[in-house]
Image 1 (cartoon, helix red, strand yellow):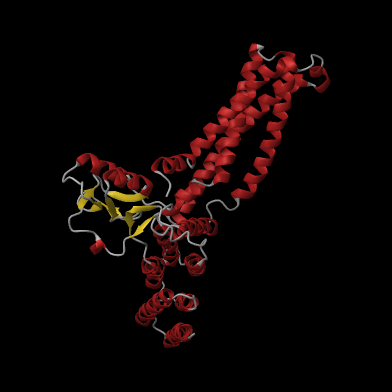
Image 2 (spheres, one colour):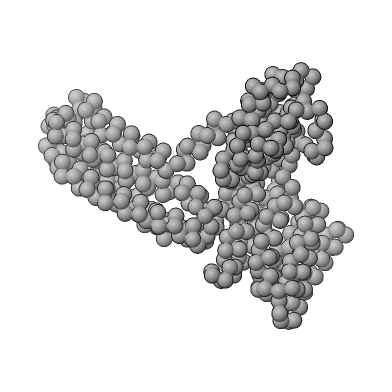
Length: 431
């Protein structure tokens, strides 16, 4: 339940230019600090360690880092293009936020600026003999940093933008979002079981643009509700499409005045609406992206059922997070009792994950069997809602396969696998 400003800061930190700027400022500061430290260095030390060679070393670093940075940028763009065409455009954002890539580029740009500032300062005579010693020692440290970074970059390039690597990133982002939501299923507020629980006298609140809710600041909503001595009922949660005709919330209280535009605007600002969905507070988006990767792999143009099978395995790990043990009482703790938030339905997660795969892979016996095995595993989970959802999707997938599979033997195999789902659900219920 981070505030809007904390969320905006987290978005800023993930931008590639942020780290590059941070490293560049640090590099300039490091190059100039030698001027301050110079008076404390013995005068004869420069001749003993060969600090006069720093001019040539800085020149080599400046020219090589500019070349390496240009090459790295072109490689990075190629990786983004590969992720877009081979995986899904929705996963490109995760590749762009890769911390290793950002650190590598920031290190290269910072090293280039460090050497450039050092060369300029040396040409003006600002360092002196003692300052050259400090600059020489720092330059050696920069060389070590660049070498280590290059070795990491070479290893990282072998995986950047690949289907498996990108799919793994989507899985990790989805699991993180689900785990966060499991900790706070109602984002710190009270549970809103059904929209019909909202008082009829509650005043609806609208947003002024069309887009997806990326972030909901429940803490700020609670503060507004406390000021008004009212309750705020959230109608739209992160991931949902909103427009000016759909209320995103409703406010109810004895002192609420009809048509209070200032209050409505303050409430609307708690809903961060953007053009696209985000992984942070929207676990369903990660589920949609995973199924989209499988659907693309199952398309006739790609014809890669192996990737779809890999995604089905990942869906099991994603859904297993819903039954993880949460810290005692954390998921039931209500931080904002005057804010009422609907929960994410497990059935919706199942629909996001499995419906597209079952639809696009209905004509492939290996996909049908793998889906049924996944449903059998889910039916063994120690929760009745998992069993019901697994049984429902097992039957739907079987019906799709019945219409798409032309060979009776293939259909028989899928039916046998589906029978294991039903028996697993019955056995678990009896226990």
